[in-house]
Amino acid sequence: MSSRTVIRGGLVVTASDEIHADVLVEDGRVAALAATGTPAAEAFSAERVIDASGKYVIPGGVDGHTHMEMPFGGTYAADTFETGTRAAAWGGTTTIVDFAVQSVGHSLREGLDAWHAKAEGNCAIDYGFHMIVSDVNQETLKEMDLLVEEGVTSFKQFMAYPGVFYSDDGQILRAMQRAAGNGGLIMMHAENGIAIDVLVEQALARGETDPRFHGEVRKALLEAEATHRAIRLAQVAGAPLYVVHVSATEAVAELTRARDEGLPVFGETCPQYLFLSTDNLAEPGFEGAKYVCSTPLRPREHQAALWRGLRTNDLQVVSTDHCPFCFSGQKELGRGDFSKIPNGMPGVENRMDLLHQAVVDGHIGRRRWIEIACATPARMFGLYPKKGTIAPGADADIVVYDPHAEQVLSAETHHMNVDYSAYEGRRITGRVETVLSRGEPVVTEREYTGRKGHGVYTPRATCQYLN
Image 1 (cartoon, rainbow, N blue to C red):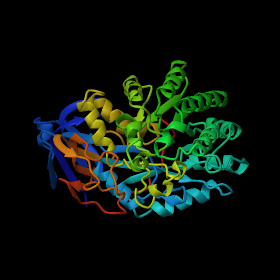
Image 2 (cartoon, one colour):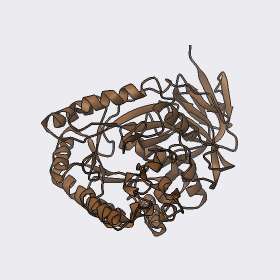
Image 3 (cartoon, rainbow, N blue to C red):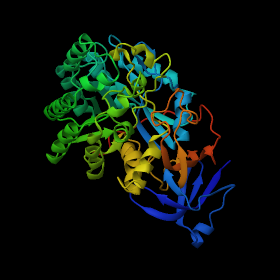
């Protein structure tokens, strides 16, 4: 049975074009587009017709950085693949790339299998995996080749968190050399974790235990230093590099310099760094714990450099680093010791809306919104043009977006499985109305019509900026 949908009368916005067009969807894919009102568009017929008049018709968001059910600091991220992907859909994101974790002493395969088991049959939208490499050895390096062949084409390493995920420069260099050979992309958490641990120890010894000190010890210069080191190691290895959750002016400057040198270096930032600051970490009582993540929130003046980086393409992607921990019972593990607050914030449901607000505020244009939230992450992680655009042959991952609707962000109304919103009370313009995932309605006029198990695992090609 063929199923057809027509989306009529909207402004179709992709990274490259804006056109008033009707979109014909057939059997889960985009079959055709035609300018609204033309004979070609009038000829589209379907069982389901969606009226998008006065609305945007945009590709579903691609969030290239999420952590569902992530073990950290003696607890687990509060969103499961079921709750997290449902929340993503509510926010107009139709694909996530999550991180499978290799535990020290175990193989990459064991970690990947464990994440497949968590996700399979539970997701409302499509998903892929990156691989966190915590234990670089000869076997791990061989496994990297096998994973690239089966569509896990990116590997994350940490210069932070000694004793947990940390890799030293030699391990990083070996993994980068392997990636240079197999086409994989190394993703780097760039903070000098060894130095940070010294500063943490010293702060606690002085009795500086409140959440705001989390930001003070994880210094912007130590993010910049690690970013510089990662770039130079990648250059020595002849490998591409993608730096995750860039938060600081000085780190952006390192990326800009590398790109000016023509190096294949890419950077991502996140909504929390664009919209929040150390003012939040310093909220009274223990409220600041809600905003503890790494890299940390920075003083507000860093935001200008991040927006500028997004406009100049020195930063290419906005992902969420969605890793939610409830304030009650999870963040509270760090009362009296900021170093024990689980690092991570909720955001998978808010990214598309906050970036639309950035369009309203004049930080970026409409097409750039789609570029940094849909098209570039799809290309970066080998999913384009199946994902990230609206074009014949692409998956019909489509959002009907009302650019005029106003909403107030709140834990009362969000769908993430976490007891607070990082953006509580923030009034924004723009809201998701209807979401299709491979042609199936997941959100229909602000009603959830999706189901767990609709989302399927999506193997990925290598980074499409290197071909």
